[in-house]
Image (cartoon, rainbow, N blue to C red):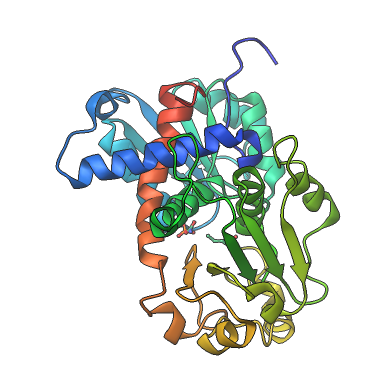
Length: 333
Ligand code: CP
Ligand code: NVA
């Protein structure tokens, strides 16, 4: 890589614990400022006259809306390019697309199928690339998720100093499929000193290479507190937050019938939380879109559910990610 190679955000693994903390804190600061009617300061015109290309080969509600809205708040132009709009994949290679698009825009936000696609895009791009979901990672979701966890729990934590998010010792239970959203969440947990227990059905466990990446994400002198089980009750024991996601991710539609059978018993319900012994006052999170099989209505629409706050936080996370990687060129300050 040349000394001028841009810095990309492809996974939470690309961030130091301090940088992840800072991105979440910046998102929180921007949220508070805008909510209290204060302007965003220099951020407000930081993309004036600049375009952010959004290369999306999969559908999206939250990621698209939050990114377009964040770019608009920064006075930039979000250019949405769905797979039907551009030559990529049909008439043109990733290399050519990457060189051409990056020659005209300030940054690229990309949602792809195989992670290798966004890695290739980044490799040949002359501007920062932010991963907006691949089959392995979803970093913008993770920033929003830790903002949500921070908002829900930091006041009840003793160590909420400026340099941390005050989440050490917190326990997240993930019940369901091991997927892109989980991997970045678990990498973030290792970086932030958060305990994470993952319950998947047999045959759907975290792949060994990914476990290696999660384990090596813990700062020196600490170890990732990742537990794995095939028993949902075990994962939720003493959990502060119970998290799940769809059992059928985009691209897995053909496996749907088999997956619904294999995940039987993994629905997040009040009863599961009680049987397993989740902590008093436990909260529920889900990146959305949600399907009824992975979580009961009773939990999803309950006061314990943080899902709509979590969805809104995608906006503040997008603002912080664009600020850090596009405006400040990867210097997370
Ligand atoms: N959580 C999330 O990324 O949602 P979308 O697929 O709607 O963008
Ligand atoms: N795991 C899901 C997340 C959607 C935001 C998927 O990849 O489809």
